[in-house]
Amino acid sequence: MLSAGRLPKDADVAEGEDAAFQFRAEVRAARDGDRAAFGRLYERYARMVHGILMARVPLGEIDDLVQDVFMRALNQLHTLRDVDCFGGWLATVTRNRASDYHRRSVEVVELTEINQALEGGGLAGDLPRDEGAEILAIIRNLPEAYRETLVLRLVEGMTGPEIAERTGLTPGSVRVNLHRGMQMLRERLG
Image (cartoon, rainbow, N blue to C red; front, side):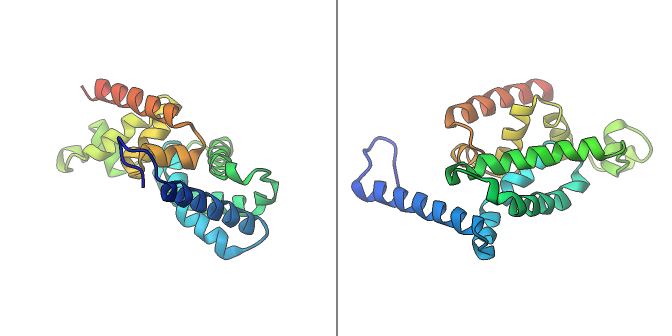
């Protein structure tokens, strides 16, 4: 492990190289048809896929679409040329699936108690205020780059380095997107 203010020891570098080697081997094994290896990739990347979808599609559709993304990924994994790009590739598959959802879906109006409460109609006076749903609604109206990184950070609990590693974004762009997204969120929350 690296700590701020100290140089990495040879053991730290070797540990990082071992983890990278194991990850590459796992992606290759999954690409070659090893279902157990693909299952381990699912465990590692499910939060990322869930977060990207949460930023883009209706909440009631997310669980089914997560499964659909991983089924598509399993069927298309043979097209992945560089195993180091798996996270970015999977994020792209996820974004494309969200776009497909919107292209193929008829407009659906979600009439949940939360939406009624937010709009002030019907039973709103009788329902408790759901601040989490309000904040998520604000996040979902932010620009795409900020929306996705904020959901991965605030909802899925991923760290900045995890977001960068899993999505294929650079750590610097993740930091910038989180910073600007948080600024916009604070402004909109008042």
